[in-house]
Amino acid sequence: MEQGMLNENQNKGGWKSRLENLDELSGETCRDKNALWQKLDSRLNENQRRTRVVWYWAAAACLLVGLLFPFIKGNRIPADTVKVTAEKIQPATNNLTATASLLKKESTEQKETVIEKKQAENKSLRPLNHQAIAKNNTLQEEVTVKKPADNLAQQQPVVIVDTVTATQEIPVLIAARTPVLKQKLKVVHNNELGDIIEDNHANEHISEHHTIRIEFMSQGIFTSVASSSSESGYNIFKTKTSPSN
Amino acid sequence: MEIAQLIKEAKQGSASAQKYLFDLLADKMMLVCRRYVKSNEDAEEVLLDGFYKFFKNLNHFNFQGDAALYGWLKKIMINECLMLLRKKNVFTIVTENDAADHPLEEEALNNLSAKEIFDLIVQLPVGYRTVFNLYVIEGMEHKEIAALMGIAEGTSKSQLSKAKLLLQKNLLQNGTGYAKRKSK
Image (cartoon, rainbow over all chains, first blue to last red):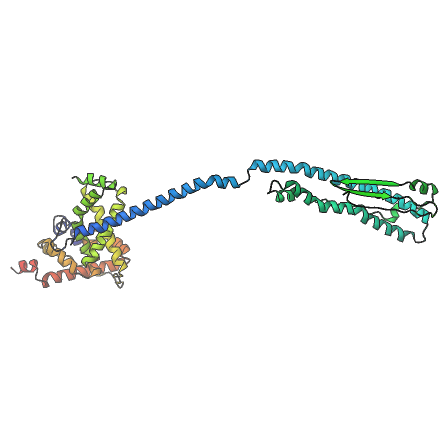
């Protein structure tokens, strides 16, 4: 059986080779070779045309990108501008921080002064309910002194944005850079003030008129301490915060 | 013109060289297609697809002689034929066990003309014909045939066996030259 299969596959000089070498057979040839070639040629050309069209589109796209590149690039703010703007903003922020710290310092001083005054007041008034009055006063003063700090915190971003409006794209940057200044004032309890000592000399000393002027940017904050009238024996403490203009 | 020169020009995209190659090889390839595909229209369609692929992939072909070119083109045509047959879903052959192999009467076939052999093969049913062509004429193994046609190896063997039996039966029934010569 295997011999037969071998013969089948090794039949070189026999019927297979005759069949293989058959170039054409009557009735089995292409009916219209030219028509077939036309079809084939159109298919080949169509493919070439398609490939060419793809290349044209690719070239056109590249050209378009090339032409639009300067415009695309022009719309972007160059890194130098950002750097310069950031440099411009930095001093402003620093100034602001400095002013804020100054303000904080002054407000603390002011507070101290107020506390001293209050002590004097307490001495002169000699109220029965010492603690209640002192507490009340302390709270009032804290609120009064906090005001400039609150103002500062509210005004800060506005001031910075004004400085930056020329550059147009920095608000985010500013928001990141601007420190939120939160004025935390020390709460002083009545116990910390110590014993109240009656001293008439202190009254005389305080009776001088004090005016503290704190100026921040274009706004001024005035704090005035008016002396008490010696006749009535009461001290009047006034604090005024108002813009300069 | 030499075929090597024609191939070179065809690779460069010369339409005239391509046409010349087509004219030279179309009839021969048509015969190959007709051995696999019965209808003339289908054979022409396959021929066009095969030549299209041939010209498209010509750049990857290294010309090493006429036989190599002919072998490559024939392989393309056979693949296209099998693709068409698969597309038409003609290989719905039920899986069969290995059948006993019947030796082909080589002597009888050797006495036939090329035209008579061709007609005998074309008369076979599509499954038998395809396996017979691939195994006997192209010299493929059953494993390869099974993979190409998507059938079991045993099925390929049984199809070949049946094809040979039918071929011998047709040889006697059709009153071909062989039968006439044998009777003499």
